[in-house]
Picture 1: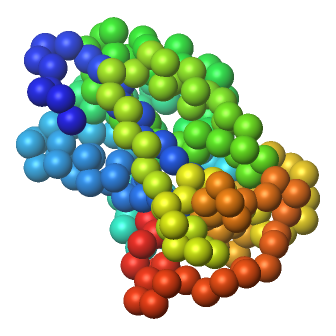
Picture 2: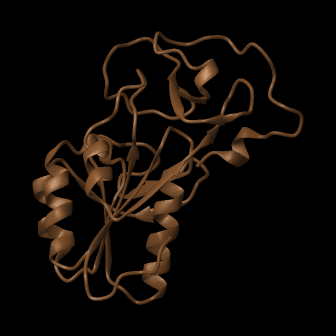
Picture 3: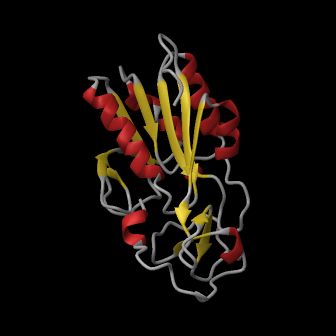
Amino acid sequence: MDPTPRDIGWIEVITGCMFSGKTEELIRRVRRAMYARQRVVVFKPRIDNRYTDDSVGSHSGQQLRAVRVDHVHQIRAYIQDARVVAIDEAQFMGPELVGLCESLANEGLRVIVAGLDMDYRGVPFEPIPQLLAVSEYITKNLAVCAVCGNPADRSQRLVEGSDRLLVGASDKYEARCRAHWSPDGFELRQQPLPLGVNLAELTD
């Protein structure tokens, strides 16, 4: 990351496909801010009911206390004197999130956002593309393809259904590279992962 700005706010976006470590990176940044004695508040959409109700959680088991909200407009009521605002699973928050993040950054807050950049069809997942355009810092994580072990940037849905919003983990999704991803649904693995690759250790 570039030198940290002083006396101004900014927006950081952490993005990538499923199992790329987005939430784990958000947790890491939040904990560093807490170690620096900065007041932090973390949010997640109520639709994300994985792991625990009152925490954001990574696939590797890390957790951090969070406020669940039904709508972006509820976030301001919980910020109070916070200096750092973190929002996980931002793809579920809707287009209003962009204006809120801009407003908070303009008021001098550090805003950390994590979310999917594409849905299971490979279509840009709003509001992440818009947040990328207005953010100061962008981190795009790659996962490990569940088929061949190459770097993966796409989320393969493993179950039937056309709903864009389907919350799930390894029971419903895999990380795939471009060559082994299909928007039409699950494809059987065609070759084993390279010797020594353990997906459980490489996912967030």
